[in-house]
Each structure stands twice: as structure tokens, then as C-alpha cells.
Image (cartoon, rainbow, N blue to C red):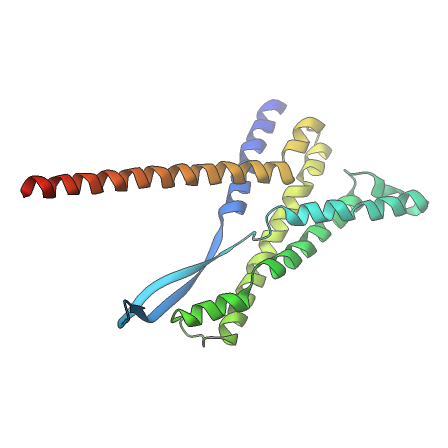
Length: 223
């Protein structure tokens, strides 16, 4: 029975990890006009979107948090009243670990997603977010959306990272529990998704090339 529960939890965690890696918030963008071959063409109504990832920071917050966690552990060795922080499966350790992951998620997202540059590039290409003025207002809008979606993304990432400790508390073996969360699982899922996307792109290109060759052959035969 315990093995069945472990397998079910394993599949659920992988599914949630896939959602964490792939989830995006699409910001609608509209282009009023474009320049093609020196001619200005009106393309009013042409729409696109900016994809903002729910977990833009990836696994970096976990790595940063793990690097910092030596400090509370070192303090616990020095001060007896903090001894509980030496237990990686303990409540105090995991609360601090989760808090650091949330903080670093915001920090890393802020320094890697250049919303000001995105707004400038959008303005230069003649695009705008409907209802938002180009320039600073667009950058502020992107910042606002990014801040809102980073919160659930960071909470999800923190929960996934402390899941091994929770699983261990419920009696799941340590070897299984360590597989349920953390950096390794996110990396494996990310690599698998990236591989599938590359295979899909390759198959689409092969299909497109096949259609082009068929079209060329038909034109030659018609001549």
C-alpha cells in the first residue's frame, strides 16, 4: 500500500513540476503599423503576446538558498537554543529554507527580466499593450504582472523544495523522499521538455521542407 502511495505522489509531483516549468502569463501586444521593404503598412488589429514565465528564475533560488543555509546551521552549532536548525527535515530549517527561496525568486527574476528594455524594444517595433502607454507605463505594467505571478511561482518552488522533508515526516523512505523535490527534479523535467520541443521543431521543419519540395515538383510538372 505504501509503495502505491509513493508512486501516486511521484506522478503528481512530476505533473506539478511540469506545470511550474511551462506555465506562462501571456501579455497581449498590438501592432499599429510596421515597415516592410521601406513601405509603412497598416496592420491594425495584428496581435501578438509577451510570455512571462511563472517561474522565470528556474532552479537558481534553490541553489542560492542552499548556499546561504550554512549560516543558520553554523549558528545552531554555536547556540544550543537553535539546535533544531541542524535538522534538514526539521520545521525551523525548512521554514527558513522556503523563505530564502521566495526572496531569491524575486531577486533573480528582477535582475534577469529587463522590463525596461522589453518596453523600449516594443516601442521601437511599433507595438503596445492595449490600454497602456508605451515607454515607462509599459515597463511598469510588465513589472506589476511579473511581481504578481512570481509570488505563486516562488511559493510553488518553495513547497516543492521542502517536499522531501514533508514526505519523510509521513513515513516515506528517505531515498524516495529526496527524489520528490528540489533542483534535480526541476532540471530533469526542464531538460525533458526542452528535448521534446526540439524534436517537435525538427519534425515541423521536416514537414515544411517536404511540403516545399512537393510544391516545387508540382510547379515543374505543370510547366
